[in-house]
Length: 439
Image (cartoon, rainbow, N blue to C red; front, side, top):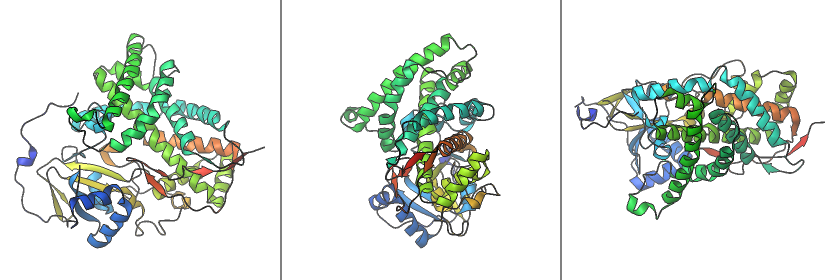
């Protein structure tokens, strides 16, 4: 369980004077619009003017330091757990205080240790079979020679896979979750970092609908918790792992399950939609992937996924909050309580790190793994995405299966622009492609 609240703060300890980061001199609301709505353009302008470390003052996050210098970003990501804690607000605002996003220090480390076996090693072999099964089922209904969106089919695949990973065997409750989760995720992303209103006005806002979704979710998962508790047997699914541990309250389990569903399928589906969007426009890359899939290889496919997650970064920031009296970052001292946000996408698009960074070229990673600090698609340090290997495996199997059974048509269609949904960036047109069956 999370630690109890305390009345004394480490922020009360005085710290020596040191330079502060250069501030963006814009009104709070103007900076907030730039950060929330025109983020990429605003960041490029601010980087050009202030450099790769500066401070903005925006609604909800307050005074926030923005970092896109690789060594400094690495210092943020790898900082000790007692020096840097999770950014505020964070996704526990949506998923609940029992979520891994809501935990810090030893509690956060313990939760990750509990969950890790379900998303690494031998567990991935079971995942591979589920992914292939779900992909074959989905693509059986794809139209031939007609343009269609891939974002929704990829969302169905990844949702089915994470539900099977968490709950094991199929049951009626999973059908209920399949109907509930998509609208819940859509609304939840929009409100994820918005401070909830007080109860007396909450029922008049979109939070009321979010609360309805949450109550329905907890009822369904509660029934599954009761079933798991009464018959754990040899179950190896994530729900059984959480119940068997005895470390979590019933509400904590619901919070964590919601976290794993939300974080475990939306971003992977978005990345897969981007993959098809890119392959439609890069026939040479597509042809080599098909040859490799037919030959049973995977090295180029893994390089392609690494490059895809660089050039079409789905989650563009990683955040921390200073928890010590001060945190030294390069030549600057960041005061206690200040949020620090690493701009992942601006590191991925840095021409000093990647020649022609806007070009989609999997050969960048063909003979070398992505460099730590230069490639942060899954974040870094103690808060690096626990499902990174799981998501990469899922993407590999989906791409391999599609390429073995379908031919993706290529053309010179204009690139799809990104659309920000509150957490993830997706192709604006849904990653549209045209396919035909391989005979």
